Length: 414
Image 1 (cartoon, rainbow, N blue to C red):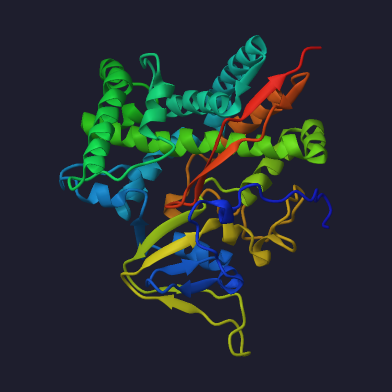
Image 2 (cartoon, rainbow, N blue to C red; image 1 turned 180 degrees about the horizontal axis):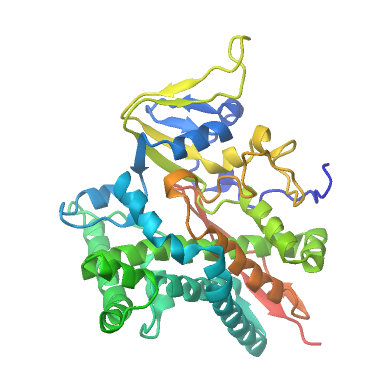
């Protein structure tokens, strides 16, 4: 093993997902291939990064089909926009995610909320870790968005809006109609209890947050609601799962936990980045090409050297981040093992592609990893902490995402 490697492996195995197709050995190794349904599968690191960075691709999946049915005058959330408009929005909102702002403004919030959640754990003697992590993620993301002044129960409303199992809304079946009614009701609850109070407060007095920025841009209340829910999914739901999966690794690997407890903050963050490399919360992104896209191919073709691949215009591309993150050409040998001291290739960021790449790379990446460390470093300093049972894992095949539930931790009496 490489220096610093501890030997831990993935916790989330997609072969365990209900109804998941078995991926053949050759398919897993092939960096770029077209499936029988015409969809291109990209699994190599270099090819995946090229797709995500290309200006000749646009977002696909993640509910964009629903957004496309909205009136043309309705401004799409930033997640569903591409091109110059998207780049300008990202440029204007970059100030909310600078390292200085994270440390000076968001970190005190992380420390306060982490302390409150651990106080609740000490008082009760046990808690569901997914609930503790969700509360942390909600408070931090709410500060970025500007969702202050919400009525009590925002966690319940978000749980209802992002349920463990989704139905398929539609007009052709009773179940579809029920899901339409349910989701419309959830939209209204979030609007009246969370978004509208924040909008009213910022119309009276602007603050340095996303909602104030959107008001200055002339966005309607409905458009602001759409942005808030997009950020809720990206900044709250995914962070909760990463807190859980990182804790799961630490609970079940004594050497890893000892290293984490003894490390200073930069080393702890590097360790969390390595866990995230193995366990990206969203393991597949979709793009649609708008023009031919040339991809590098790391494997030799006919013996004359690497053979590039060109994706045609107008095709759907599925980028498998978990496979790209385990590309030995990017992360070194034995890529399925957890190695906090792993020396990544010069072009690979510590979590590789777990936060995406290119124009749509997650702007809150630094926030998510830091708040996870702020919480877990304090959690694992609690005397008598233990995991009562391993979490239950649920899957969302559409985006290859996982959810950890029923993750009970306890504090044994001294």
